[in-house]
Length: 192
Image (cartoon, rainbow, N blue to C red):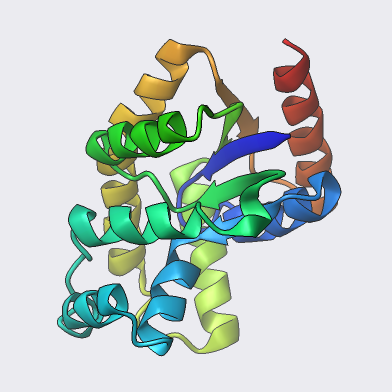
């Protein structure tokens, strides 16, 4: 059984690697964005609440996000493990996730952080924006998102590093090359 998180800056390949890890380990990949979209689409009470913030361009508050994650982690498909992508983003969310897992007598096995140089990420994201025609992804916006990531996640990463479950993997390189590094790091972390 594997219970893990994947953390990384925008453009580091988290989504791609999450899918590959999910397939190889046979665990469900859970993206916070997917949880939001499913709740909004299903018009659940939490989805209706979240939509108000999302429509205003605001962050969905922890109180709503935490409840959505708690609900998602009670579904049957997480019994054999899971890979969380996009949560927790704050130390308060780390504490909440700890409480959710403790309720089920569980804990995280590994926290995988994809690392990458900001300049490389800016180039990668500008290229992706050009390919997809996303006008909202200009250099200023990308750098702001990277600053937010660094500001939000440093404390989260430090907390997991203190627990000895943080594994860092270089996210730059070919997709297969990164996947190989990721799978080796997970294997090493699980046997430690």
